[in-house]
Image (cartoon, rainbow, N blue to C red; front, top):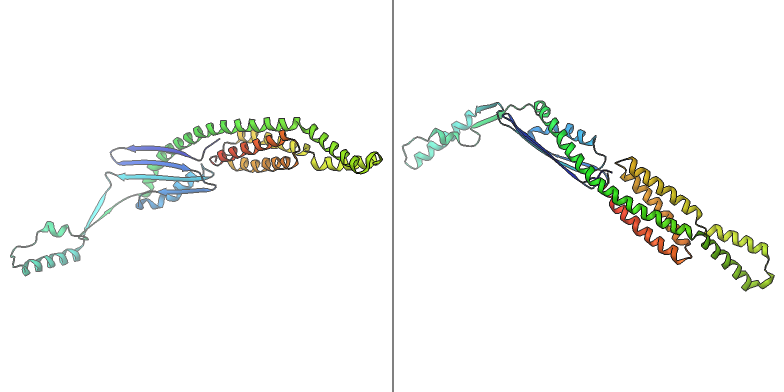
Length: 288
């Protein structure tokens, strides 16, 4: 099994770039991917999102990408209108104050908008560096989800074993349930009609009640659902939705058995099965 919660991390730094990728996963019924990266790399959001969508079926996934170019080419341009305006304003201010000095060039150059910079970044070049590291972080993320999922798998199978044992207990009382139905019908006829009761009618009513109260079909379907649950849990690491559906079917059979329970031991096992099934469904909320 594969958990929806997990964590992955990878980083790289050389003389040209500083790069790190962090991936976090949380529970969600659907797939929700959030990509956090520098604004100037916004064009790379879809390739990154598509890569993660190809590896995950559901869950909330957050990716944090930090990318810095240490030796990126930079172009500096002078805003001529701005520097003239600041210079004239500074000269005017000095005149108002009666100061004969000229404003310093450093002061004017430090004003907002005088010098405009433009880093020449290549998104495709950045993507070529990001993808290998993203794959490494995703592999780490995958490993953590499988590791947590293996523990969940073992816990779910232990609960499944408890369900199977409870079903066996109920099965052992099936004959007793049918005997109680027969005894109740015959007792009612004896109370109402005495020894003159029509045996054919008694048999017909007994058969009708057995059809109503027998749990053979429910036990057979329950066995099939439990068998399919175990097979699916071992077959598909991302079986959360399918297993949740099977839990609904198992719960339906358990409820029907409970509504027909005429023996305390059967009622007790029904309660145990419902509690165990709820524990399984709680665990499945973390399975992809």
